[in-house]
Image 1 (cartoon, rainbow, N blue to C red):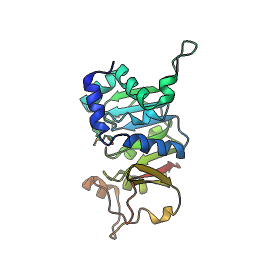
Image 2: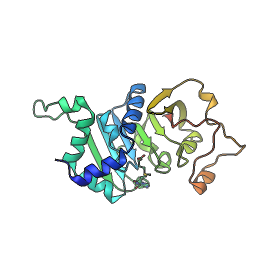
Image 3: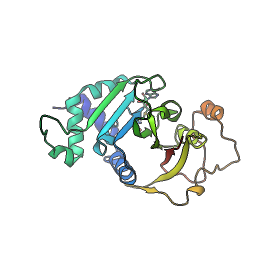
Image 4: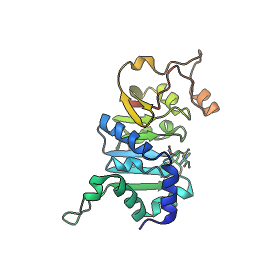
Length: 219
Ligand SMILES: C[S@@+](CC[C@H](N)C(=O)[O-])C[C@H]1O[C@@H](n2cnc3c(N)ncnc32)[C@H](O)[C@@H]1O
């Protein structure tokens, strides 16, 4: 049985019910990924509704206590993924999704294998692309939203190329690959630099505002 504290944390996280599930479902339909790394996840367990192997990283103690409730987390995942709920262990091996949690600072060495992830998630949690690209394989994707400046950071990083944007309409998300040259155009003339982004810690104002961007790691 999930602990009440676990359910409360998830209920708060999932305040816009199903929102993150819809986001990650849309992304999962657009790319092929097995292993996902989500630094600064807090308790957003929704990637595990759609991907089989997700590593979460957060320094907040509430996230730690959430993920320590292994049974509770598995229960939330099972409720949200009918396929998982229906799966049974076979030959002594569980086919449950792999959920790993690292309680720590993603800017420090996480002890993970270089290039071993297919998708790196960066949502509202700082400059993850700067610290964690090392773990993403070349050819893998970075899903990043603009809020803390990390999308702008990726846009000036030669290891990344924009491949898609995630548009949000009320209640749904759509991954678009067309007209990509019309995105990431600043409203005002400004030279985006690492220093500028680190000093402001905020996103850049662009003429178009998709919910998120998908960059491929190319180098
Ligand atoms: C605003 S929350 C966003 C949570 C989640 N990504 C979401 O979109 O719902 C930011 C989270 O990033 C975590 N965070 C920020 N910097 C971090 C760091 N250097 N290492 C680990 N976690 C970090 C915070 O503890 C917090 O839980």
